Length: 116
Image (tube, rainbow, N blue to C red; front, side):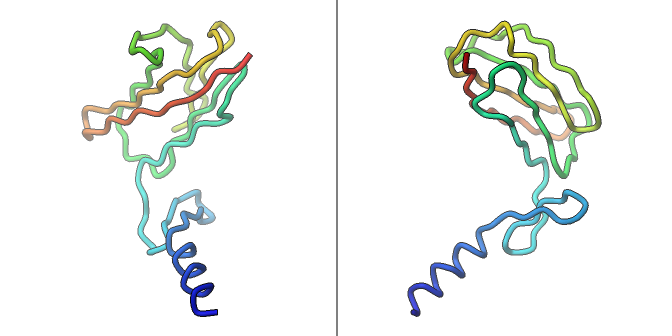
């Protein structure tokens, strides 16, 4: 019983939850900034990129092949902090999504899978 409670408490403290205002809060009650979500992953035609608790001033979104070649792609910003990436002309495989903002020293890379 003691081990079960310890595991449950550990899992509870490590969870990240959304408040009513889409603010991400971890299990310790701390607000997480610039949390990026890619969906769906794997993707077929389009991928949505959402940035929660955004403190970015000028985010630059780029896509690279798994070997590092930059790929020209249509990226539309539909609303604040929500980007839609057109993957229809991509071949199946893994790609890297890079989000940079030199103004706030943010630079993150995310891997995603394009399926047929």
